[in-house]
Structure formats: structure tokens, C-alpha cells
View 1: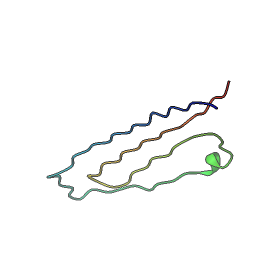
View 2: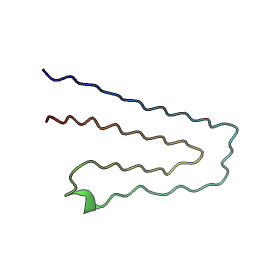
View 3: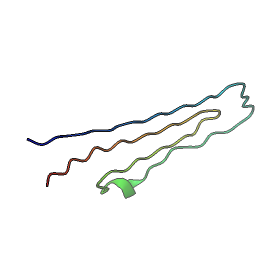
View 4: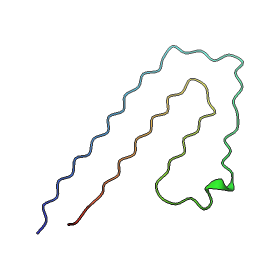
Length: 66
């Protein structure tokens, strides 16, 4: 029998308020085929908006057996 301890914690906090966006232009999100052969763990975060909060959290659990 193997004892397993898992400690996982992700705390994201944000505050956005009283913002003004006038006459702003946003862009395009483009991901080309360079990721078509990607392997492993990766993350892509894109934003084309104004006055936004983007929070990202990745938790990876790894089990190692002796």
C-alpha cells in the first residue's frame, strides 16, 4: 500500500472597476500551425479586449512510484 499526499492550492484574486475605454481598437487572436505538432503541457492565453482581467492557473499532479 502506498500513502499518497496531495497538496493543491490555487488562489486567484482580481479587482477591476471604474475603467473607461473610449475609441479603443482591439486586435485579432491568431494561432498558426506552429502548435499543430506540440506535445506536453502548454498554455496559450490571448486577449483582444479592453479593461479585462485574465487569470490563469495550472495545477499539475505528478505521481511517482519508487
